[in-house]
Length: 146
Image (cartoon, rainbow, N blue to C red; front, side, top):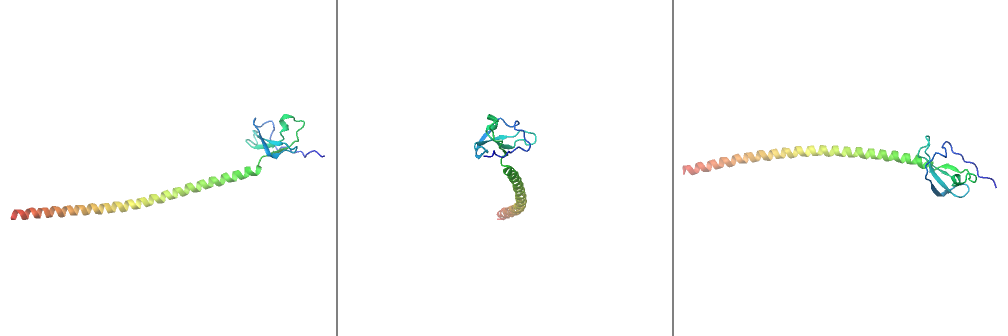
C-alpha cells in the first residue's frame, strides 16, 4: 500500500498556533483519525483555522502529514456575506433617514395647517366677543331709555 500523499502548508508555521484545538470528526485525516483544528497565530494568517493529523502533536513519527485550511470557501463567502450585510444595514439606515425626512416634512405641513386653523378660530372668537359686547351695550342702552 502506498503512503498517503504529502500535504504541506503554504505558509503557516505549525508551531505558531493557538494552544486549544478541537477534533473534527466530519473531516478525518489521511490515516482515518478525526483531524484536529488549530487556529493560526502567524503574522501572515492570524486567526485562520487549519486541520492537521491528530498524531502531529502526540507522536510526530506516526503522523500522516495531513494538513489543510478549514473552510477556505466559507471564509470567502463569510466576507461576502459580511459585505452584503453591511450594505443591507447601510440601505436600511438610508431608508430610515428618508422616512424621517418625509415624516418631518409632513409634520411641518400639518403644523402649518393647524396653526392657520387655530388663527382662524381665534379671529372668529374675537369677532364674536365684539358682537356680544355690542349686543350687551345695546341691551343696556335700551333698558336706560325705557
